[in-house]
Image (cartoon, rainbow, N blue to C red; front, side, top):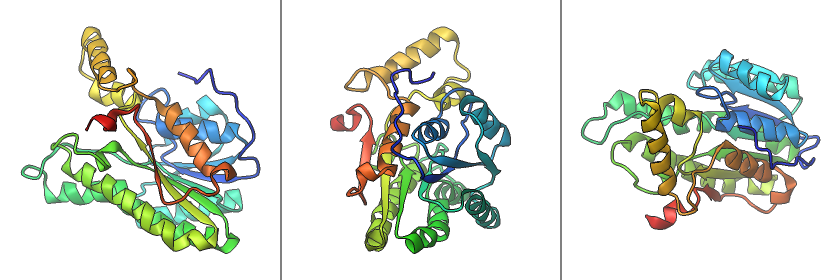
Length: 268
């Protein structure tokens, strides 16, 4: 659903953004897709990376034309080529948004070592490697903003059955903090947005896939009831936070986290 209350300005005019994870798990507004929409509406030129071409094409149908690059971010060769392609298209990279991620079930007793390693690659490993590629470009221009998309799983122990995901998202936060210190004097800012329970296509495509309509309604109501403000957030909440942190309005904000959870973590 489009954010009908949003009135775009021009706070990113002249900026050029690379968004990693610009598609969506299914139809509708996932985080990456909404971020593409809002950054473009605020005046930024956008290049989007995703492993799924059809997801990128669907984003384009929603928001209009933008440069699309298909890439498996875990593959170093593909990642390097994709960053080079983005630089060629954009001319420079002022904004980098890393919102690829995902979880697999498993606690410390049941999760296979291979799954642990892949979870780290998918949620934090590729971020380390793309920072190594993009930060020198930003440092050369003495300007840039990086926003990583984390999860409240990285700051609270919400469930034991996602041990790798939780650990990886915690590592992502510390990667952002440590990196922010390293590049602060070079004019580059690095921050992390931390969504809580969100109503996005991830919920409808995966968590409710085998539920009948009545079960689905109950499932959403149960998730809403856990949030102190009474309702889950959506991808637009994440996108507007990313847009702000990308802009010069956040010029003194670096090395920190913006939690978008409707107060959920206040209870745990």
